Length: 276
Length: 276
Image 1 (cartoon, rainbow over the protein chains, first blue to last red):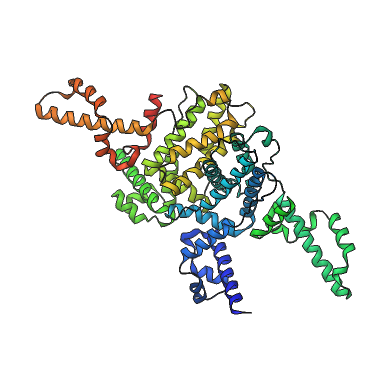
Image 2: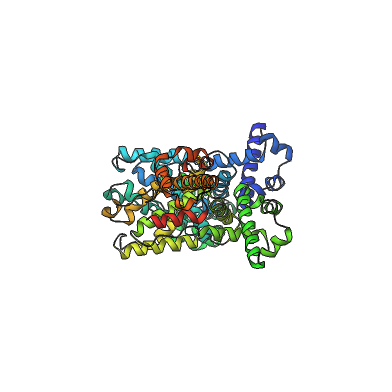
């Protein structure tokens, strides 16, 4: 492996391991030694990339903010709702999102920099777009409403974590929108917004897991039979539609509970954007 | 002092000192030794009252919940708004409210019990009362809306802390109500609700500080002159109206910034209730 690619991989290993440690223990109790153990890197490698625990925490907060990209096509309000539900989904299935959120909140108490600035700016831009397209009331100040939305979301995911380990987060975020939309959008627009999000990310993740499992099975069968799996399209498309949710959840998807398979930070969002 | 009264005083000293330590350092970094130092009690006395740091934290979270009592007269929605603004004021001027809130949030990460149950129940009762009096839409589920309100408040005070050290908290909480009220109340009712709260707690605290300062001055003058201060009402009422906010804020009130004097947990609420 080239030197630069190896450095990128080491950086990635450290950030991923640190996310899982911060998610488990929070900033104060997170030990560098535990990050090293999980990342399987040396102390020297870690300090080559990061000057301090604080610097790793900052990298994770930056990663978290880049988890969601709002779909620019269609209804800006629906895209805003969808982005929030994608982040809510990431909070359930992704240590990076959880660690970033926990660090943001703990950072307030530790006197850190404002961790929600980028979220607020991105939300305000979608509200502005909503005003341009006639969805959002013209008298709304996008920055004022964006701050209320981001702040409310932060509190709602905290209460959902305390209530249900975030099991009810999708529904709680939908309730947040039902409570806020009447003050920012025309009733005729609200009737067309889906507060649970346009795409069922859980179902999507389950389908993806099933598809991957099936592709792996077909590849294995083809390898055994000595044929070329790329030409074997008939059995692939036929099987995928028939099998339903059962067997996929019993294997890989079973780990992540009722929302299906574990989902990497960007994948669900990119897929949702494509499907929208 | 009687044995029981002394025990109550010791308990109070420990809880007050612990609140200031938890407010400064959070749960993890709060040291029992620092609580002992600030409370000026022995280790034995502390462990006579509390089995552990966790038990002290629980006592502070219980104290915090009892900070606000909703006014039962007049508009239930306005009383709900007022109660939230009283708590917002307490967050700015009262270590007990700040420590209770910080411990509640940190407790979620530490897997503690749900810290917002009582707030949600009390809020739901006010929404029910609002339904009975025709202020709140009958189709609203009070528990669902109460959870969204309490969760949003929790997030909003966090973002306000990060943004401005809670200097803009009153206005941010008012914005929260402007965003939520249209989904739960009739427009005709909303027109009469003051989202900043019915009572200006800051002005009230300033007036109280000025009154106390003046009374102290009159008592001192009377003592010097050898007369009875209780009969000297003429100069008291005359002076209070003329002096304005300046000199009061320059002395005691100056410590607490732009909202006036430091206010004990219950006092502002009781005063607001009486004035309503």
